[in-house]
Structures are given as structure tokens and as C-alpha cells.
Image 1: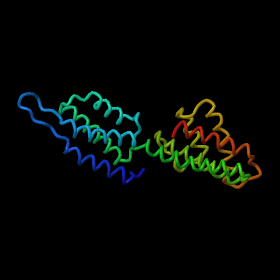
Image 2: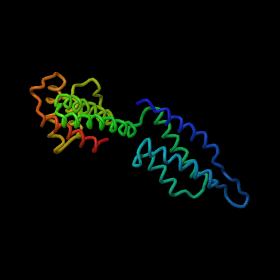
Image 3: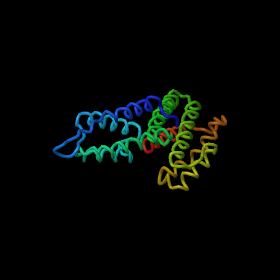
Image 4: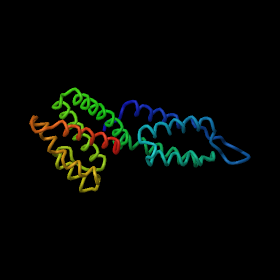
Amino acid sequence: MKLDPRIQARFNELEEAVSKVQIVKSQDWMDYVESETWQKWSTSVLNLLDTVFGSNSVHSQNFKKIYNEFKGYPSNFQAARGVFRSAKEDCEGGYVFSLERAISGEIFGDFVALAKQGLSDGHKDVAAVLACAALEDALKRYARTQGLNVDDEVMQKVVAALKSKGLVSGAQKTLLDTMPKIRDYAMHANWDKIRAEDVSSVIGFVEQFLISHF
């Protein structure tokens, strides 16, 4: 995923701000990190890491641990700077998944809302296309975040790949078995084979899938 220019700019700003975190030289005791500049920089880093990677990510958790246990030692600051630069490199290398999920979740949510409105207004066929498109794209994006190469695969193979890795199970797995057929009917304009109940089931599945994985 191409990194949002605003995220890139903020990483660059905080990289520049690292040099402003002052190490105070002490003749009587050991050197220490000046509190105000440390707090300003570290708070901004925490906010950025939570936004990009998620509060439960390795990057955020590692940085928070250093922040919470910070004693003012230069070695503490060096560790925090290392975590920050690791996160920056991962972002620039394209290894950001939680941000992609958040953005995708919003987009798919809009598709689902339109599908629900269409179904409510009696436009079953339009609702079917919207719901099935959202489902197929959501499944592929989720599969990619799990390391599966499914970009050019049909929906049946995407579902099979997710199942083989144990990424869908239980009731979700059972419901997903019926979705490819409905998707094929919608995408090939076999409207007479699609019932309003089928469209409603796809919408319901997508909503739960988004809640679970995005």
C-alpha cells in the first residue's frame, strides 16, 4: 500500500525532532534526557504509532513500554529512537496493515450502507452487486494481510485459501460457503436466481466480517 503523504511527512518531522531531544551533561551525576523535549517528542510518536499501526501493534507496545518505564537515562532514549526508526522503515517499506484495514473498513462500510439502502428501497439487484463487490474485495484484502497471494483468484479460491489457513471458522465458515454462488449470480446478471433474502445474508455477513477483521 502506498504510504499516505501526511503520514510520511509526520514521520519525517519526528525524525528531525529527534535531534531536539536534549541530553544534559552532568558533572556531578550521570547524563540525563531533558524532560520537556523528551515528552514532546515521545507523545507525538505514540500518537503516530497508534494511528498507523494500532494501539496493540508491536511497534506501539514496545514504545509504550519504554515510555512507561522511562527513567531519563540516555540509553532509554536510544531504545525509544530505535523503535521509532523501525516503525518508520516498516511504513516506508509498505509493511503497514492496520492502516489499510481501517481505511478499507470505512470504504466497505459505505458500500454496505448503500446496499442496505438499495435493498430497503426495493432495488434488490443493485444491492446485490454492491454487497457482493464489498465482500469479494474485503476477503481479498484480508487474505493479503495474512500473506496469501489471491489478487487474481476467483472468489471460490479466495475462500478456499482462507479456510486452508484456518482464517475463517465456525458459523462464519458455514455462511461463507454460500457466498460465491450469490456473487456469481450478481456479477453475471442472473437476477432471477437472487432473492432479497440472499442479498440480506450477504450484507449481514459483510457487516460481521468487517467488525471481526477491519
